Image (cartoon, rainbow, N blue to C red; front, side):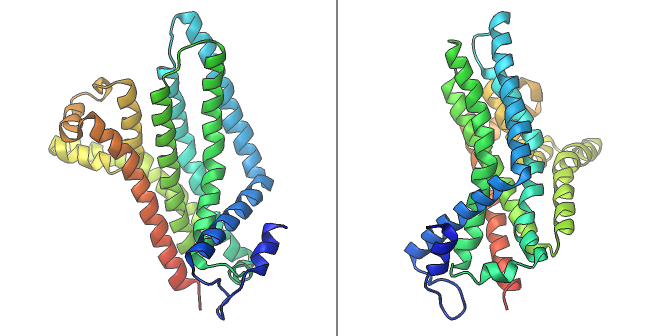
Length: 300
């Protein structure tokens, strides 16, 4: 039986949403997530994402592994850092642009009322869309990294498995962060054009304003180093970038004097925990705010 038929057979309350029991909420979430994944697999953007991003990066990874062995490198640490930096440049904007279409696209297409009339709970529908989209955007990125690592295993090149695990967790936290931001924007925006414009502005602010413009002004005004570092670490992209560097360079030599401020305040283990927890917390908070807005403004 199809997922649509299962949803149609669910008992509904007078308001059209499913009864809010724990078992039904989890079942709703699972069914909606499967529907979202199936819908994304049929979309052209997923095919482009998988082929262009996953395929090209996997090939780049494989060729880099072969080259590293010729040059005498025995590990994948530097290659993992390169892959993570590529993901940091591509993954956020892609996640934002595609995710902001979730709620706003259904509303603009005129099928929003039909979707909300399905016998599923509002929480199951909203969080199911989020979980389904997370699987769609994260698994191809992880598969590309796993393919490169598998190539290294076949070539008998040592693989730093602890770094592989940490980088996987970093990518999951980064994807979840921008998924939550995208769902918040999608819930607030009334059209797809507005949502996509807002997503692009958010990405520009995180990439340019916080790192280049704001920090440049603060340095010019001779702000205390601790304050400048605190503003930089409020940016989830900067947190992700620094955490990835920390795994490759435990002393953060590339950051210069600011490394002392970071390591004195967090320590290595503490900053790795911050790199995982802070973006995930931002994504969860934004998604929760988006759900609150969704319940208050999209229902009669």
